[in-house]
Amino acid sequence: MQGNIDYNSFRLSSGGLFHSLLQRLHIQQPGRYSLRRRNVVLIILCWLPLLLLSMIEGNLFNAAIELPFVYDPTPYIRYLVVLPMLVNADLIVDKLITSMLQSLRASGILGDDNEGLYRQYVEKLSHRKDSAIADIIIIVISYGMVLVLLANVDQLAVGTGFSNWMTNEGGNGPELTAAGWWLLLVSSPVLQIIMYRWFWRFYLWCEFLFRVSRLKLVLQPTHPDLAGGLGILRNSESAFILIALAFGALLSVGLAEDIMHTDTTLKQTVPAIATYIILAIIIMSLPMTFFTRQLLEARRWGRVVYGDLGYRLSKAFDKKWGDPLDQSSGVELLKTADSSTVCDYADIYDVVNNMRFAPLSLKGYIRQVIMLAFPFVPLILTEYSLQDIVKRILTTVV
Image (cartoon, rainbow, N blue to C red; front, side, top):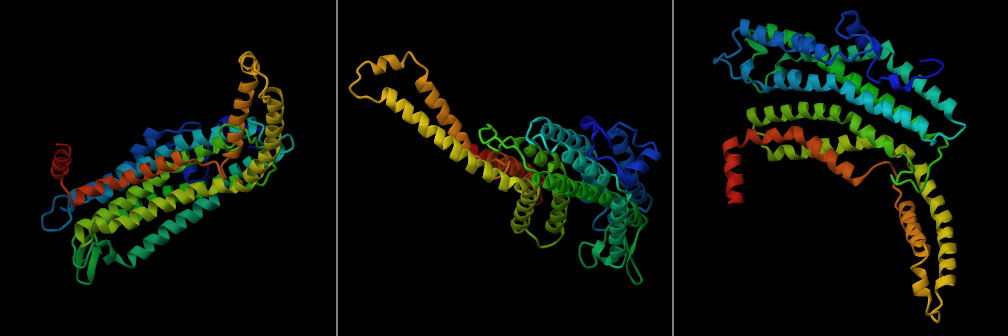
């Protein structure tokens, strides 16, 4: 991305070793998202072998083990729900990030002197996201986790002596089944690589916003978004919410296993769920606070300027219409726009006075809490059947 930057074609999701590999294998078509093709290929690679190998080994419906493959929710959630969510996030993230890049450039917020620096920051963002070194490190970390699990195969069992489709009881303790080997060597690392790539790209976006926040921005205290014109950055939270939902789904299925196979109760999982939602919101909101200093300065400046203007406007209004002995002033006032001017100014001053310390909003937080809590709703079914829930609802209503 050198010279004149085409902000319309910028894609945060593209680039890197993994993306190049998908193109070489014709899974990812150049210039296109190929979401359906990638979904199908990755599901065939990560989930279907687990099903087939479990069937071949007799662990699909095996009543002799406590957790056959067909009754284990983990592979379904991981590779039929979470994996497609992470793949389909490309389209959402890229569209929102592109809109933010375009808006920051076209809005005038950058001023006349920062266009060159802004272009350099976008070029650096593009270069960093295309780095193969980052993907290599991600692969090393993912397979490092595999080595840790191989050294502790017994941890794949839910509890002591708990039999499942991933392990068999051998002479020296639990041993991996063929499906278990595929899970550790292929399915789990692929899921981790895709998720860690999104974590890396979120960090790059935060780094980019930090650089932009160091520029001397031309913020408008009277902008109706209450963020000096930076309201477009709220799309940043929406862009990465799908990644947070995917991670929440992984946590949810882990908690579901604890509830179903240990003494953990649904009530005991509430602190973990609340902690996750709070941390997710803090992490997604953190980049917005980079602009706090400039927003506070803009609000302080706006209060001084428009406060002085308000005083002069009020003084002029009172001087013209504030004479109690003038019996005609009320009738004459209806024929002028003076009162409307004062009211309009009051609205403008409210906007300046209510400027936020960051491009955030209470409605946005509420929306995030609802969305982040959604993956944990099915946990209710681990302690209450659907029939019990319906009965409770009907009893409450009736």
